[in-house]
Amino acid sequence: MLSVNGVVKSYRTGGVFSRERHTVLHSISFEWKPGERLGIIGESGSGKSTLGRLLIGIEKPDRGSVLFHGQNIGDPQVRRGRISAVFQDYTSSINPFYTVEQALLEPLKQQNTGRRESLEKIDLLLQQVGLEPSYRSKYPHELSGGQAQRVCIARAVVTEPECIVLDEAVSSLDGSVQFQVLELLQKIGDLYGVGYIFITHDIQAAAYVCDRVMFIRNGHIVETAETDQLKNVQSPYARALLQAVTP
Ligand SMILES: Nc1ncnc2c1ncn2[C@@H]1O[C@H](COP(=O)(O)OP(=O)(O)OP(=O)(O)O)[C@@H](O)[C@H]1O
Image (tube, rainbow, N blue to C red; front, side, top):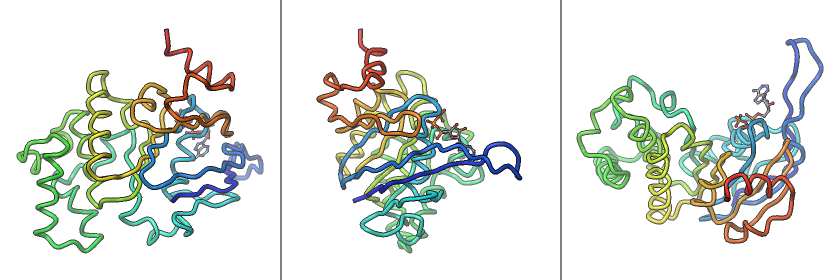
């Protein structure tokens, strides 16, 4: 269980000595339950990525808390191996000096998994994400966008976390590759029982992957709906986003 309780986040505006702050998230509260695939949808600048960084504990809220099974997600011990992330920019997400195998071994080393077990896991995982065994020795610059994002997904799942936070994970990919990666997420979710928090501006991608979606606007949650009830959303914002993609 991940619980977000009255989270407020602001950033300084103006120069280093400025006292002015811009509030990006206003008292955000919600819960994510294990196994759930929750979408967070919003337009550019709505605060989605900021929320994503708070959810994986790499930024701290000004007020409120993000708790993973009751413990502060900001503590690396609490999140290690249990929550992971996939970002939009797959090229800079993988260390350019690491082969695919090294990139996948790294999180396993942090968990003190033995080398033989790790290599067996990597073999299976590469197969599951649709990459030939020969990809083990490839460097990021030798991969296409779709292949690199498959490696990022494999790396996010290798420690068998409870939750993967995906921030615009398919947005930089071409149409058909986007769809393949969305299908892969479905498959990996089913195989590993891992839950997702899928952050995106793309309501169709969210509806494809998620059971429930939350609409965020100007740092406020405006509505939450089960995916199969999306056509019944009430708020003008959610309706407008939905109408933009339905004929
Ligand atoms: N580190 C930061 N310092 C200052 N301002 C920031 C920082 N991160 C985000 N912001 C500001 O917070 C607001 C929300 O940004 P955020 O990236 O969270 O939105 P978003 O919904 O993910 O948008 P996009 O999809 O365009 O990335 C923006 O006005 C942005 O300029």
